[in-house]
Image (cartoon, rainbow, N blue to C red; front, side, top):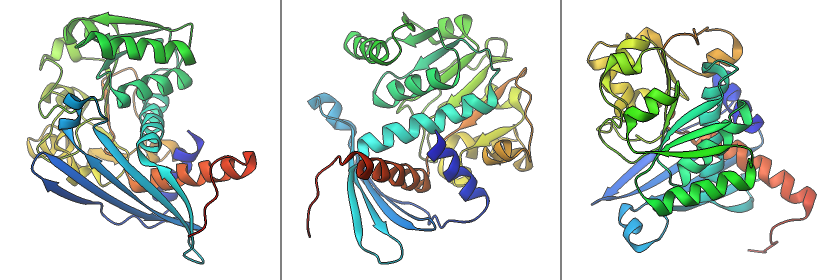
Length: 302
């Protein structure tokens, strides 16, 4: 969480360089190339997204992160990008909970019980006094895995299955969506959505929209993890194109952290995270320092 917030502030203060990430689509598969530079390090994350892996019982997302010394250009570390992505995305999502939900929030509704959903739930429990996670159950195996994962880290948190998105909305005021869906995963019903808090993690392409139109009409403001989200994700693109939210009412969460912007957590709020290479870089830096301190990892010569 600290590494991610430091990355957000570095981005806001323009102390870092984050080129636009490269998407290369090949059929249903995608290769993502994400470079970034901080004061003392630079790095690049290469990630493949292969939806067909789900039928082979293989991870859909795989890749590597390379961390370099900025001053010498020498490579310092090679990290598992899937593990890194899960951790930093969980922390980025939880940053939204920290700054955009009431402090007493004690439950969340989770749509998507894959790796991203698991880490969203894990980090949510670290920033709010969560006692119950309501999960939209689409498969027994994935739900059981989520239950076991949360029990290992937060044994006092109950994970309860629900059969529909409507049930989630009746049970909790905070919804986290971490799916690969191209179309909204919640009903477009203002009555059910009003006054609730939404975090969208899954949609990462311009044609994808994870939350329904009514969420944006009710919120009137959209908070992004970075300005890249304006062009990269359908959730932000469509709500502006349709006039639900004015461009000046779309801003980054860094402005909430610095106090430049305020948000009313007693009304509908929506946070869209599309990811940014700088998050990976700062979390990789943190992991690198911890590895050195603990003498963890494997030293290699190249």
